[in-house]
Length: 461
Image 1 (tube, rainbow, N blue to C red):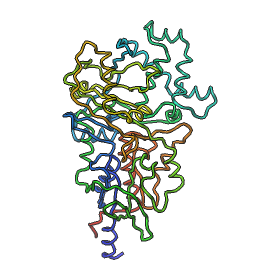
Image 2: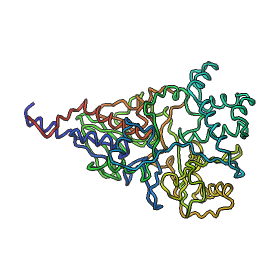
Image 3: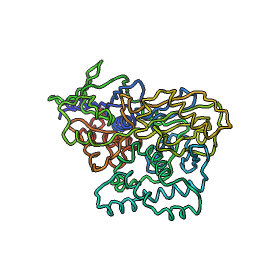
Image 4: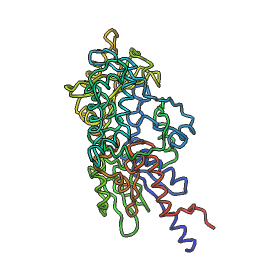
């Protein structure tokens, strides 16, 4: 092609990214560094998506993503944190303080031994044995866990703990279930055992916390990226002229190609129209991949009246309760601040969104008062997340339901014409994780590079 055609071809190679969350910003940064003209459209009035560090209580508090999971030399967000020299704190999640409903604290040896027992019951070997014994292709994690724990002989159960007295197995099963529902973001009765057996996650190391907030990573990724806030996309149209039109209330945008990072919850509600319609395989993936729920209630007190060295506080639940808190995270442990965060997972997370702030705070203060009767509990302020009713997320993160093949994540990720897809629900190996979202954005950028070479567009021979 002649030089005029070259200039026209390459200068028209503009890429629009829909969504300024982790995936969208990773895609934008990767493309910009490769020489592409990029713009990001974000529906919210802030960047970050489901990464949101709030400072309204005078402390950096992460309403969304909190941990750098599986931190090692290959985890991209850990590498970015190290590059930026951000302070981090190791989160072993083993310093637990657990009380019953009367406020009596279980001994540390009892909890330690029980966690080992729980890990044994959820090990790949035990889960695989459960499927084989019952001749099942798949089952729910909750179903397998219940069978493995409750069928364990009572005498052996007591012997396992060397005489340490524990509540009955049914109570401890419910306690462990609620604890891990905050990890999976869904009731364990919906989580596929096969999704655990097929997980060969290579990022195996310590989990880290960022005392100054996850938002630091987002702010770095967003540097020098043109981002347009308040741009709620209603339609994405691939036309016969070879361009893509993106419709928002204020403007019709055009691009050579588009990276779509809409959360799975938004895609499920069909809030954005695609013309032509998305392929059947992609629509099936959107319908079948699960969108989990996780919410937090932050309580800031005038001083720390609890055990400052216990990273995690939990309470033994009762079956008669309508609402169960998964665990309470102690910010004194990693921020040196008198803040406690209550986590709710799965149906509990959805249910708590229908309660008022006052009802939630009262419920949590009642729990604390049972344990710390002799302390004067003075609440200074609070903060509540509600991700499942947030119109721009409609959930927390994805999970694989029972009977669904993990290839559905690949179907959701597959390019469609000039549309490329990214987000935590588009990466089979690391779905649900923030680093999965990041990696998916980089992947989408590379897919665009393979289809629309930049050739460093403003430099010609």
